[in-house]
Image (tube, rainbow, N blue to C red):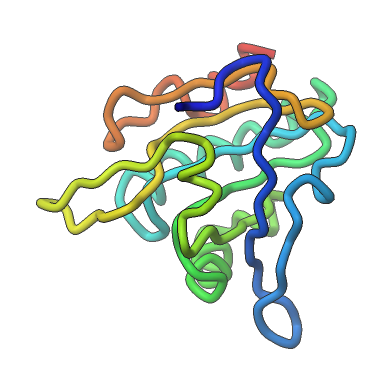
Length: 162
């Protein structure tokens, strides 16, 4: 069952690349009681994710901060090495976006947002969505109908919803 508005965000142990290699990140610990935007997508370095979704949150980061959002987190079913390389390539980290890997898809599955697209080589990936979470509760969630589009789940759409 997919997590909806009013539900508590499932906890997850995600990964990021630290100075000494992969580090675990407890999602609930990272979020705490703050107002956070999380966006998830099918995969690092894929077309729509790289050319539309991440850049939309880079453009919207300042406006999200003005609306009280303390953190913007990108989650993808990729390993932390790929997520760091993607952050470096796009400039997402420099723009204030935390890039976290969900390599086994545990968070994605707990969110009820796993999908497969074998013709595109995408197996056990995340649907494209964005949500605002406050104090661990999902307050806003926008999911795309197609993983190849980035309209309702983009940064500007989240700013407008806040």
